Picture (cartoon, rainbow, N blue to C red):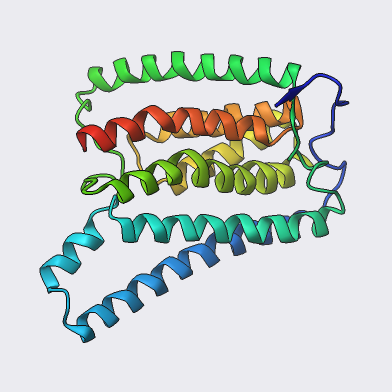
Length: 252
C-alpha cells in the first residue's frame, strides 16, 4: 500500500560499523551456500543408499534447476539469508527494520519505482540489440541451461523463488547490507557502483553481467533516493517476472 503521509527516512546512519556489516554480508552468503551444498550432498547419499531412485534419475533431478527439489532448496537458502540479515542488521546498526527501509511506500517512492522500471525496460531493449550485434541471442544465463518445469509444483516454486524469495533476500543482502555499509564511507554513486559490480559477479554470467550489474546499480540508487528497501524489491521482482514466465512456458 502506498502512503503519502510517512516522513522520508535516511538510508543509512552517518557512520556504521563497516567491518561488521561486511562480515554479515559474507556470513549470510556463505552460510546459504554451505547449506545448499550440505543438503544436496546429504540428499544424494541418502537416495543412493535407499536404492529407490536410479543414478540417472538422481542426475536428471540435480541437473534441472527447475526441479521441485532444487527450487525448494533455493528457497530455503534465501530464507536463511533473509533470517540472518533481519536478525543481525538492526543489532549492528542500532536501527529498526522500518528505519532501515522495510516500510510502506510513499507516493514519491512509487513514482521512483516507475521511473526505475522505465530505465530498465529501455536498458533491456538496448541490451537485446547489443546481444544480437555480438551474435549472443541464443545465450542462456548461467544456471538455467537445463531449466525444465515438469509439474505444477515445480512451476509454482520457480515463480515464488524468482518473484518473491530472490528479490527479498538479495535486496536485503546487497542493498540493505552491502550498499548500506559502503554508503557510510563513500558517495552514493561509488557505493552503488561497487555493490552493483559484486551483485553482477556473484550471478556468474559474463554475457549478462552488464545488465545484472545495471539492475544492482539502479536499485542501489533507488534505495538511496527513497530510503525504502521495498522499492528495489518491487523493481527486482518485476524484472524477474517475464523471464521466469517464459522459462516455465518455453524452457530454455
